[in-house]
Image (cartoon, rainbow, N blue to C red; front, side):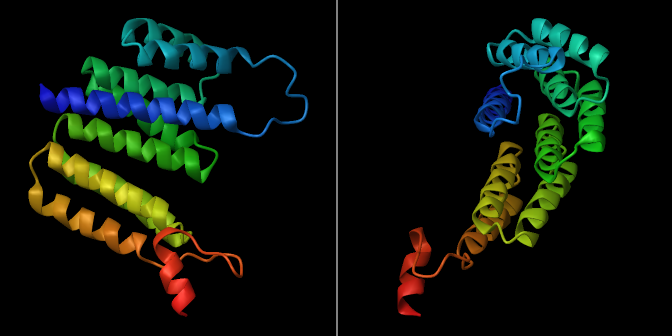
Length: 201
């Protein structure tokens, strides 16, 4: 029960943070126009899901998908809500669709991470670890080291949820090592743990 509550909190936090990022995105030209019906339904469903009203959230997500069958956010949210209800196979069907139709690297990585959460509900840490590895490698490839470290720490926590101490320790070490990599900064600037190294150079 404690594991399920922890994962439920993680998924809700994940969705809330994603909604906040979307809300903070720069306004596009013509942003004064009302949101699309699909976007409005997805926003409503996210709020319902965050309030623990999964059945109502699912109804809103289904309406959104009737309008836009390939909406990645709707499939992602649908998967999260179904996971919270314990319908893991159906949840992963929607999460797989979210991965398939994702239009940006960020959207794809969010879907990979949500799929990892889904697998951990059943303690399938092998599949969860593969997905977190994909996200980690993508961010390392972009030299986004601090973000990659966050993903490594997230992977460690997922392994801990299922009692896999060895792999959790490995991921925590990986996250620490990623966070120590030098970050490219404009001339004369430094940040956080990298300031000392920059000044000593």
